[in-house]
Length: 313
Image 1 (cartoon, rainbow, N blue to C red):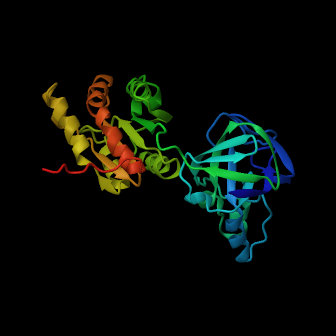
Image 2: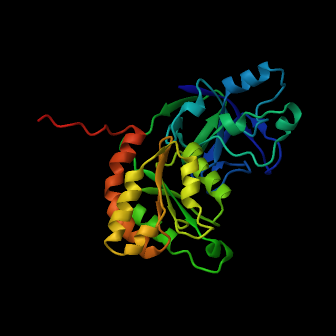
Image 3: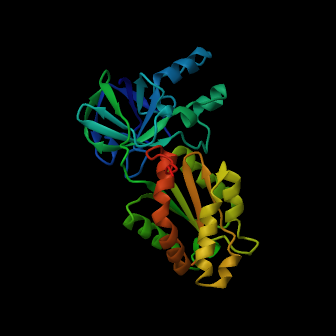
């Protein structure tokens, strides 16, 4: 349980938020009248009052809304909650979609005191059900369901695709196959073959959005621009070599050139990252082969399935 201590909005992006006593929440939009509402996954932001209080204790005089938060919540460490947590406020219902955020341009608070807690302590939600909320309302936090669909993100690496010189077919095919298998594909990205942007997106998807599965397509060959395996290795905590080995072994039964694929697979926190080939044909063949076996591993990472036990002889 928690309680709303403040509701804050801004009528234009880039302007400071101000407090209001009550608000209407619109499904799949956000707070009516707030400039950050829209059809995306960061419709309403939440910040823990305890984090604001600790920040004030350091000598910073900050008002509610100064960090860009929509709701100030008393009663818990919001950052410790898993993505998928539901917040019920009367008839309204929000779903946690992201932990923290990237700070591309430092805010006024950062320039004034050299720090801002929103990028590391704030959380973001989308509106599942609308309703009327007001300061003082209690919030019930509901943990994610154990049988919820796995989430996935698809990243296509293609210099020509980014320049518009080639249509990206492998990424959409990959996303379609994942959806048909029951996955909730929450992001599809097209990136140039550059290591830093790829690493940035994989870290964001794993750490902030807590995606269960990230599939990349492209960038696994011998070209100097093929950097997908190196980027994946650098962001992973542990490797899952068996998946990449299985893809290569199966693909070798189709074409011996599969031995030239350098794709890897690994784990960052609770996210599995799998490199797939760049062509639509190879993507379909590889994913058809390994996808049925991934759900058990993803369940273990998520904590909704147990390890395989040894049968008694």
